[in-house]
Image 1 (cartoon, helix red, strand yellow):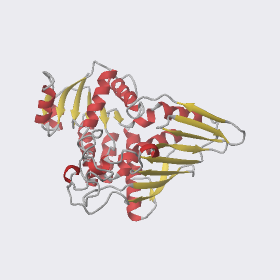
Image 2: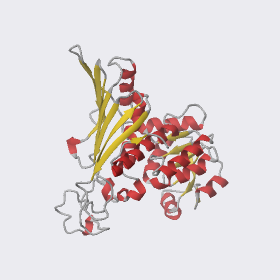
Image 3: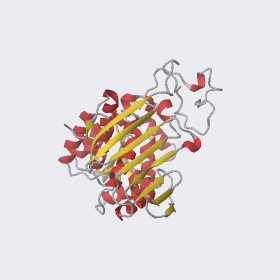
Image 4: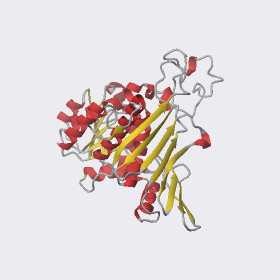
Length: 376
C-alpha cells in the first residue's frame, strides 16, 4: 500500500516504521515537506529510493494515487493539512493535537462531517492493554458506576517542552494540548460519557528566568552546575539544546482541571513537568460505591480495591514499549483501515472532543472562568 507523508518529522517516522513492521506491504511513495532537499539527501545516503518529493501537500495529493496519508507537521499545521486530505476522502493518520485553536477545530469538525475519510488519530494510550483491562473491570460492574476520577501525569522527561521547539507556545498551544489530550482521551474512553463543563488552572513556577532569549546550554556559563543542562548529556536528543531558564521559554510547568460529565460526576486531573526519576506517575483512580480501580502506566499495575469486603486484587499488565504498546496497535489499525478491514480505533470525533477539552481548559486557566464543553 502506498503512503504519502505530509511533514516528515521524527514522530511520524517512528509511526511509519511501526506501520511497515506491522504490514511490510506498506511503503512510503511520496513526501511533502519544506525540508525536501535535506530529507532527500538523508534518505538517499542509505541507498537508492523511489520516493517522490513535493514542495506542497496539494501538489502531492494531485499527482499521487495513495492508499493513505500521514500528517506529522508541527502542531499548528495539523488542521490546515488535514483539511486537504479530508477533501479527497483518503484514509488519514493524524498526529495529535488535531487543532491548536478553536477556529481551526471548528473548521476541522465541519470538514470531517462532509468527508468520507476514515481517520486514525494518534491516541495510543486508549488502546493499551492496561487501559483495556481497566475498562473491562469497570464495564463489568464490579465497582459499581464510576462516580469520581482522580488522574495524574507527573512527566519525568518534561525538559522537551522547554528545551526543544516545543517551548514555542504558538506552535504547541500549551501543555494541555500536548499532554493532557492523551489523558483526557483515555478517561473519556473508559467512562463512555460526554464531558459537559470544566474549570482549570495553570502555573509557571520552575521553567522561567532572565537568561537571554535563544541561549543554548552549550554556551551557557552555568552548564556544568545547572540540573537541567543538556550540554553534556548523551542520553538526550541533541535538539534539546535551549536554556529552560531563558526569557523566551514558553509553556506552563503544571496544570490542573476539574471536568464535569453528563451524569453529574467529575474528574480531577493534574499534570506537571518537573517531576523526575521515581516521581514519575501516569494513571488514574476510578471510584465507584462498591470499589476502586487504580492503575499506573509506569508500574504497569492495576489494583482493584473492594470497599465493603476485605479484598484487594493486584494485576500486573504486560505492556510493550512506545506509548506502552499503543503505537503498535494504532499502526496495525491504520493498515486495516486502509484495507477497509476495520474501523478506526481512535476516530477524529474523539480527537476533536479531546482537543475541545484542552482548548477550553486553556481558556479557563487564562480567564478564571468555568467553560461549557461545546462550540457555542
